[in-house]
Amino acid sequence: MTAQEFCSKLTENIGKVIKGKETEIRIICAAMLAGGHVLLEDVPGTGKTMLARSAAKSIGCDFRRIQFTPDLLPSDITGINYFNMKTQEFVFRKGAVFTNILLADEINRATPRTQSALLECMEEKQTTVDGETYKLDAPFFVIATQNPVETAGTYPLPEAQLDRFIVRLHLGYSQRSSELEMLAAIGEKHPIDDLGAVLTTNDLAAASSEALNVKLGDASAEYICNLGDATRHNEKIKLGLSPRGLLALKKMSQAYAAVSGSSFVTPEHIKAVAPYVIPHRLICREFALNRTGSTAEETVKQILDDTTVPTEQFE
Image (cartoon, rainbow, N blue to C red; front, side, top):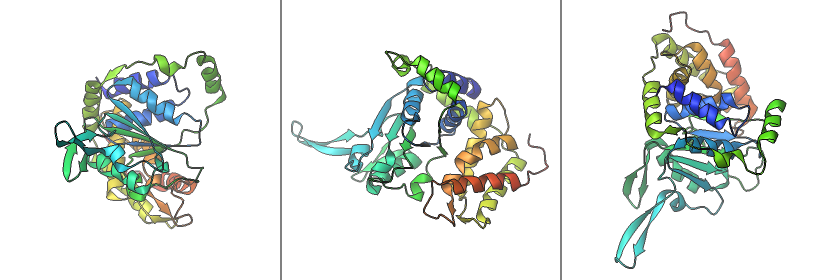
């Protein structure tokens, strides 16, 4: 299965539940193929959790959900060794991370100690418990949600963990036509109850392989580096894009090109994913603590407008 076919099937299936969010679904699809993780951030009721559940149900794989709360422990996520009275030995009980798609709901409601338990899992696809390392199942994909408006009882994600999310999305309110479709579709049963899998993990692996092999020419690589350099020399930005951020932009550009049916990356592909990849990795001088504000997004938009595209061929 090609990456374009994978994205088309996923978008169509999720569209039965989530109306008017085709662009966001394509970005999530590209993030999956790029091997990254997604942070959905918006006010309550905009469909964050429903979108994550729909994506998981569309692919025939293991799915688990963790409701993050202040009393959640790291062992609830990674697993724990317990003493089995029958066998008189310690046995490892796997945590929720041993799955293919993990929904971390309201991730900012857990303590920093618990949030950090996901760091190793997200970056290295493994977890270490009592000195022993366990490999996670493949594929492993985290979709996290958080409400940026409510601050009571929340713990802002540290920069190190924000950097582990390849993209951050704001769903926003749907257009009026999409909301009318939603009202008409939901009756006695919710559409997600009848949503079935239309893709397999083999389809995901094949599409991911294609995405990672999309050609990134010298001009595209130079353009990505130019964007990164522009964030580091912008007077509004205190902390610019890191080398890991450049790699994330490269992978997302390749994946987005693949789902668009292209065999090589163009400036349009880079510009399409940059607003989702770059802003949450920046700290602006005016609001150094407001990592989720609009300042970073507006600055990135200005950088995209001002940065010159190399004149060499991108093919």
